[in-house]
Amino acid sequence: MNWVISHLTGLSFHRVLMGCAALALAGMLPAPASGQEAQQGGQESGTALTIYSSARPGAIPPELYRPIVGANVPHPGQGQNIPGYAVIRQERDIAIKGQRDTVRFSDVAALIDPTTVTFASLTDPDGTRVLDQNYQFDLVSTDRLMERYLGKEITVEQVQGDKTSIINGTLLSTSGGLVLKTDNDVRVLSNYANVRFPELPGGLISRPTLVWNVTAQTIGQHRMRVTYQTSGITWWADYNVIFSEGKDADSGVLDVGAWVSIINQSGAGYTDAKLKLIAGDVHRAPKPERRRVMVGMMAEAAAAPDGAGFEEKAFFEYHLYTLGRPATLPDNSTKQIELFPPARNVPCEKVLVYYGLPQEFRGLFPNPMTDRNFGTQSNKKVDIYLRFKNEKDRGMGMPLPAGRIRVSKLDPADKSLEFIGEDVIDHTPKDEEVLIKMGSAFDVVGERKQVDFQVDTRAHTMQETIEIKLRNHKEEPVKVIVKENLFRWLNWKITDKTHDFEKVDARTIHFPVTVPKDGEVTVRYTVKYTW
Image (cartoon, rainbow, N blue to C red; front, side):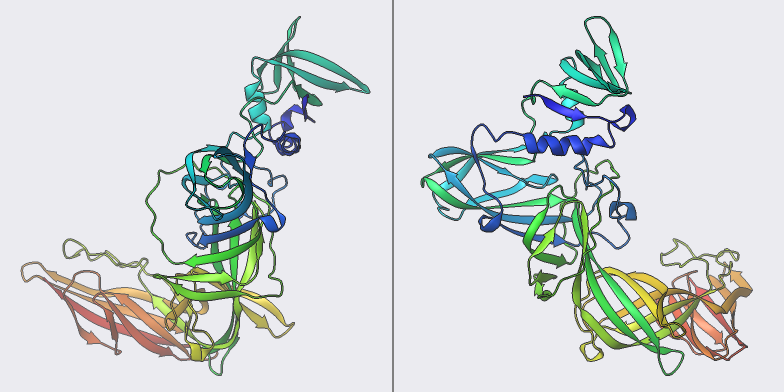
């Protein structure tokens, strides 16, 4: 049998036809010469997978899940920069013909961790065991075939007009085209139609395969279960929120919808699988970093069909979400499934926060910060937040997995939804507060400046006076929280102030103020540090 690779142009050899050749060859591969192949498909197979939410929202670049032409072709290294992982459980039927037999289990994920594989016969669990295991992953591809035939005879077809010429020679190189040594000369072929190989080199296979040397007391049909971990597959939550104004400018209501986004780039597809999702920070032993390989993939955004949705329950110190219907996750795809039905009219509060420092100081300095110019730069932006309680009596009350929250608002002029901001949240239990940062206010600005500073190193004292001005250009009053970090040293005391404040923690205070319409408010305070 001749193995044929079609080719359009030399420049497109590695990009366009890699997949075509690999797919064509996969369909032409002969059955294994020895060993039993586990049956797949129909009622003979059962697949379940549990996906762990180790991908943070925004951690995966869009090019990994937007449609890219030709990206549905298997590629070495695909999925290696997808941060999630999954546990796969598959059941298949196999006939064991002797007390010692070789079992081949194909269609496993290309990014499988072979050290996590467990094998069990459900038919005879006590009498069947694996003596040794091999993981074969040297897959057929254009590059692999060419690599195996370096220094060997191949046949190349060239089309010139309506004529096809046949060139036989020894393959010397594939860099920049095919370099062939014929009986008469050495040729560089950049344009050719087909490449023929005498046979498929030994060791190349079409699908990643686990091969076991099995000993069994029961001869005949066995139902076996295989479990393993694979990388290149992950999930996170996407929340779509619609905001509506309340009776006053500081309140509103939210309609909250939640969807699960799943990326599968593991090198295997899963049809009609039982799907579970784990939400929580599950610790894993650290692994050596891999070289990042940017690979695009085919996107399949699928809305959830009618049927049972996710059922949530506590599981160890995490939360487990089980889908009540089978799910199909093709390789190189993304899928969206509704996490829970939309929650309607969830009360929320709109909060404006002014933080006048250019950056937030959370750490501790080794010594008192006596430099008067440190932290005197001013930020003018007033940030906007939406805040709500994840409580049952407010229409929520379910554990919220980490995810991205996108907020829209209805434009009454044309009844269209307009995007107004987005943020990310961490895993949030029930009855906890959710804070969504929306952006910065257009019509409300702030100004912070240092109006006095004194330091006495002998007396170990330092005194600073800060003035904050808030200006409101709206046609209605606004409430603003002025946030201040007392970062210069641990021991401090407010000795003078124009407004009452709330002590949030050892280094942070809040001044809640109301700024009248088209008006201005000045907040001034003096703090004394001692050491």
